[in-house]
Image 1 (spheres, rainbow, N blue to C red):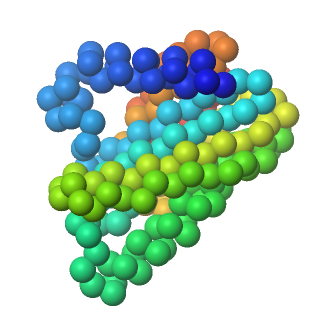
Image 2 (cartoon, rainbow, N blue to C red):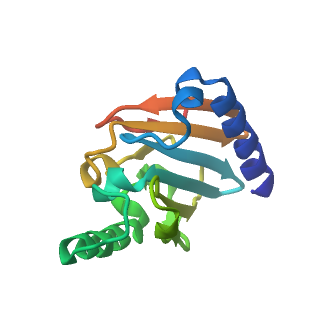
Image 3 (tube, rainbow, N blue to C red):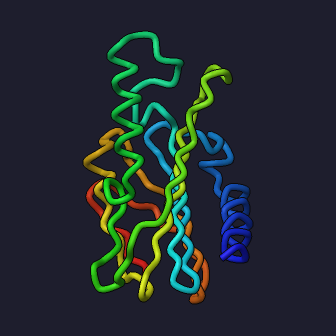
Length: 166
């Protein structure tokens, strides 16, 4: 699996370097989230990254009870993989441990949310449903970097779309 993650990282870096839109605006763009997808030997790895504004509506340290409640809700939502990503049933996937990185409020502006998900699957999923569109309506585009034994590719999805892995 590590070789896929390294391959995916290199692919993502190359895509950022050659994509004029991202080169001009940088990787932190409100309304846009990123999903890195790798599948190898029955393990589906998903790395989700988004500006905090997309999921919280703000990017500063919480100042009010309402903002603290939003962070608690975000943490609960991100802590269950199927709140955001549902591999097709035929793949027989079960969730594995999840890693959600707490926002680093000390940086000031441009705070990101990062969450890593892993599924153990009987076979490669053909698709992944994306309930994240309903959870986080401020995400208007999902940039998906895919690495599997069939190769690498990048997709740009809009709200309501399902991730097709075939």
